[in-house]
Length: 96
Image (cartoon, rainbow, N blue to C red; front, side):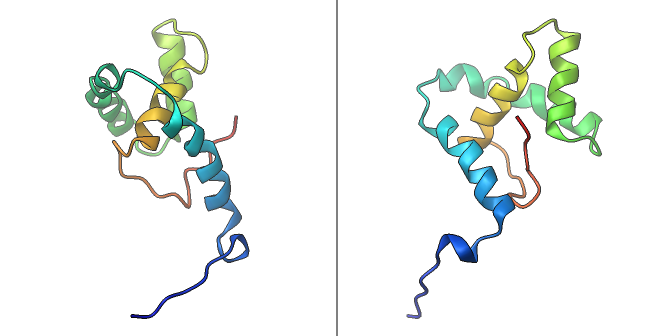
């Protein structure tokens, strides 16, 4: 069986930044059952705006539902970190 040694130099910077953004959310202690109930909510809103990025969608949701700015993005971050959505790690590129 072939094996490879991969270092940080072999991984594109976009992927490294995205992993660094997602990893802390994966470690957080959260009510996953409550969060899982939100999947359909986000799927609906993401499908309504397929050309918008997640940050813009989350900002719009925060404003529309009078949430604290960043609350929707935090939920989406946890859902992504817990692998509730399939996404391209090359283009996630969140900017905080």
